[in-house]
Length: 308
Ligand SMILES: NC(=O)c1ccc[n+]([C@@H]2O[C@H](COP(=O)([O-])OP(=O)(O)OC[C@H]3O[C@@H](n4cnc5c(N)ncnc54)[C@H](O)[C@@H]3O)[C@@H](O)[C@H]2O)c1
Image (cartoon, rainbow, N blue to C red; front, side, top):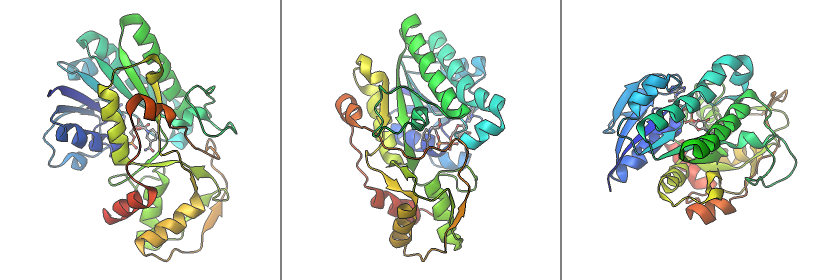
C-alpha cells in the first residue's frame, strides 16, 4: 500500500538513496532538510516534496509530519571531529533534531521512526564483534548525541507508544558521499585522492579496521525496518556486513579495483575520538529484519568508483 513517508536529512548522501528506495517501492516521499551538508542535486529527477527547514525546529518538524506514516530520520552532522569543535551546534544538529521529530511524531500520530544511529556508540572497547546489548562507551559528543537519541526514542515508546528502530550503521559508502568535506567517509576521500593522483593520508598507522556497508544495503535495512512487526529487541539493530578490513588493505583494494597506482602513503597523528577497530555482530539484523547485505566490498567499491 502506498503511504507518505518523511525523510529528514533526505538530501544528504544516505537520505537521498532512501528517498529513491521508497519511491521505487511505490511510496510518496516528503523530504525535510536544511541543506547543512546535503544538496538538492542529490534529489534531481526524484518525484518528492522538499521542505527546506531545520528539523530541530519543533513546529517546522510538526508541519512536515502531517499525514506521514513513518519518519526516516537521518538529519545530523555526521562528524566526530566537528562535534568536538562545535559541541553546542553538534548537539542541536544531532540530538535537537531527534527530540523535535519525536515531538512532531506525537503531535501528528506518526507510526514509527527509523533512526539513523551509529556504531560510534560502542566506542573503543576491545570486544569484537559489537553486539547491540553491549554497554555503550561513546568517545565523542557525536556518539553521545546518537546514544541520547536512542534513549529519547525508548522513552517515547513508554510515554506514548511511538514505535522506533535505531539502526546503528557501521561505515557506509557509495555514490553521492561528499568527498569535498574533510570529515567525509574514508572511502569517498580515498576515491577523490585516487582520481587526483594525491598520495593517501592515514591518521595513525592505517591498521585501524572498519566494517563497511554499501549504501544500497543500508536502504534495504531501512525499508525492512519500516515494515516488520517489531519485537522488543528490534529497537536497536546493527547495520553492517559483519566483516572488517584495515585501511591500508582498503586503499590497496581501491587501487586495484579502479586500476590506479596509488602514491606513497603519508602517516599523521591519530585523530581524537577515532575508534581503533570496528566490527558488527549482524545476527539481530538477520533475525529481526531478514537482512543480509547484497553487496560485497569490491562490488560496492567498483560502483562507487564508476560513479565519480
Ligand atoms: N555515513 C556513515 O557512514 C554513517 C555512519 C553512521 C551513521 N550515519 C548517520 O546517517 C545519517 C546520514 O548520514 P550521511 O552520511 O548521509 O550524511 P549527510 O551529511 O550526507 O546527510 C545528513 C543530512 O542531514 C541534513 N541535516 C543536517 N542537520 C539538519 C537539520 N538540523 N535539519 C534538517 N536537515 C539537517 C543535511 O543537510 C544532510 O542532507 C546521519 O544521521 C549520520 O549520523 C552515517
